[in-house]
Each structure stands twice: as structure tokens, then as C-alpha cells.
Length: 486
Image 1: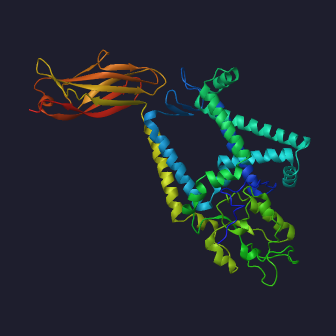
Image 2: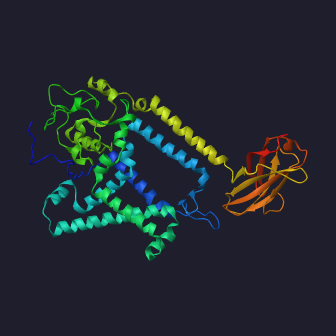
Image 3: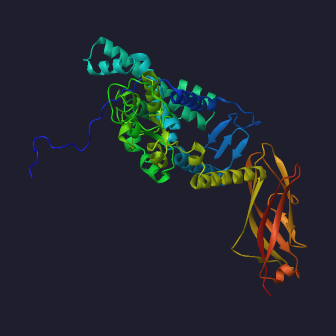
């Protein structure tokens, strides 16, 4: 066996630039709508104001790392309520499984940030340099004044978009107007400038120069999707039994029947090998080669092929959303099964049930949560103290969190401990005032009189209740009272 020692194969193949052609159609319009909505939400959300009262941030959506809280319009999530965030992440994962099982990689094709910003960068590129053929010629020609000018203009616009992207991200973590003023005047924290610079650089490089490579090599989802898809999954595919054999000339007669009808075996197939589907693909693949890891199911090839079919008088659907289970029926000239039968099947119903169940539980937990939280921990060293009159005293570490935006007074009562005296360190009586959005830490003493059943028992369960004197909110904690155990 001989090997070529002069030109050994490289470890990595050089990137071949892809210049997607402009296309019109229903899926392209859907992508424009999704892109506009997602970009609008991302850029505008930090600037929406929301009145939360004095000494509170007036930003509708804010991840307040300094105070360890998350604000989303009227919802406020505290650190100990991280289960809400965990639940949302689980819902996001199940939602991704659901849509992938039903419709393939629609997340990748329409709402993935890499796809959205790549679409935006390609749009800018097309505005400045022209459509596919113009961009190819510009890429191949030698550098001259015109090429330098077009490239500098394009890169400048890309850089502005990337800068706005990085800036918008850091506005989610502090008051946006204040941070913008500090950024402009040079008074912002260095972390803000570093984060903004990193996000600007990655957006510029990923959206402009490493578009399809991020999807193919960096993203793990193309390799995971196979486990989420089956023969009932609707995904973009080529009806090769209708399109083959390919030919440069279409049949003279008008095609009749459904898009899934079998081709006339006496002539050429419907595919005229125009490469329209390849020229519009942002990943540069040929869908006619079958399912491929690179395909992001953006469906732009469907729009391109439908346009060609209209021009040559053939029925649409040569490239279409379809399920592998329908292949045998379509080859025989039968109609495919209804779309709903592919979507509503045990797997997708299970995903939707789990997804909606978690969502309902989170909503119920959100509506039922109290505006006050309490934590009571018995002091273990010592478990109890015997007083001079024979009474037994237990000590507890008390933490009371007021989640209201104003100071509140809370009264304490003990259930299951008759005759027990209560003393809160630093307070008079059995009530304390907790400032707005703060946590009170104090020691609480419970003393059972001599001869009480609590003093003779080794441990008894008791219940401590904190009640809001200005509202109806309460917090209840079950703990134990330790006695001599006689």
C-alpha cells in the first residue's frame, strides 16, 4: 500500500464560503416574522419600565445578581425559589423534545440565536454586496478599491449589530438607563465592558465568518436530534420517487394530480436539476441527497423548489415537509396520512403532557406562595437549658424573610406547646418588624414551665406560626422541643 508523502490529507477541511440566494415564499416569510419578533424581544425587553415601589428596580425584566433575585414583570423570584427556574429549564428541554419529535429541527431553523443572527448578517450582506451571483464574483475577484469599500461597510454594520447584541445582554443584569450612562461616560464596572466585548466579538465572528460551522461542529443538537425523531416525524425531504430521473427539460404536458403522485415512468422526473434548492440553502447542502446532519430544517429549499415547479407547470411539493412512514404509500400514488396523525401520537402526547403538567405545577406554586418565608433551626449545643425554677428552655435560630415592598410587622404563636413562653432576642413581646425586601435573623427562646409535659418528654413536635398583622399572609414551620426525657 502506497501513500502520498508529498500531499498528506489535512486534519481539517478548509471552509468553503456559502452564499445563499434570496428566495421568496411562505417559509421565508415565516422566518422573517420570527426573526423580527425575537430580535425585538431581545433588544427592547431591558428598556421596559415596571413600577415596583420605592427602593426597588423599575425594570420589567432584570436578573439582579447583586441582590440575588430575578424580576419578570409582576413575578419576583428569590434565591430559595430557584425551583421555578429549574422548572422552566425542564419545560424548555421538554418543549425542544416535543417540537423535534413532531417537526424535526424547527428550533434550529427558526428560533436558534445562531440562526437568527446569521439571517440578519446575511440580509446585511445582501443589501451591501448584492445577491448570490454578485457576492460570488466579489469573493473571487482581486482586492481593489470597490471590494475594500464594500467589505469595510459590511463589516462595520456587522460590528454595530454585534455591539448592540452584547450591550443588550448586559442590560438584563442591571438598570439599563443607568448602565448605558455609565458605559458612555466610562464609569461602568470593568466586568460590563469585558462581557460586552466578548459577546460583541463572538457575535461578529459566529454570525459573519463561522455561520454553518457553529451548527455543524460546535452545537451538539444535530447529534442528539436522531434520538428525538422517528419515522412519523415531519421533516424537510425530497420526493425522489417523483423527481428522478432528473433532467434539464421538463415534460411538455402539464402535470396533474397530487404532489405525491408517482412520476410517469416513460419520461423524466419532475426535478430539472436547476440547483435552486442548493443555492438558497444557508448550510450549502443538497437536500436531494437525503437526511443530513447539516440540515437545520429551515425549509427555504421548499420555497425555492415550489417556485420552480410553478414556472414549469408541475405540482408543488417535490421538496416538502413529510414523514418517512408515508414513503411507501406515496410511491404507490396514494395520499399521505393527515398531518395531525403524525403530530398527535403517543410520544408527542407524552411530551406535551409532561410539559403542560410541569407548567401547571409551577403556576399553582407561583399563585399559592406566601409573601413571607420563615426558617427555624433548633440550636443543638446544648439541646436545652434547665432554669433555676425547673423550667426547660430551648433556643432556635430564626430567619424571617419579608418579600413585600414595604415594612411588615409579624406576630408569632406556638401550636402544640401549651403554656410555653416565647422571647425573641431584640424584640418586645411576640412580634417583630421586618423591613421591606429584607430578611430578619434573630434568636428565639421557648421556655416550658416546670412540670409541663414538654419537660418530661425527650422531644415533642411543635409548630411555629408567623402572621402578618397588616395582611393575611402566614408562614408555618414545624420543629421540635427537647425536654429531659424523664
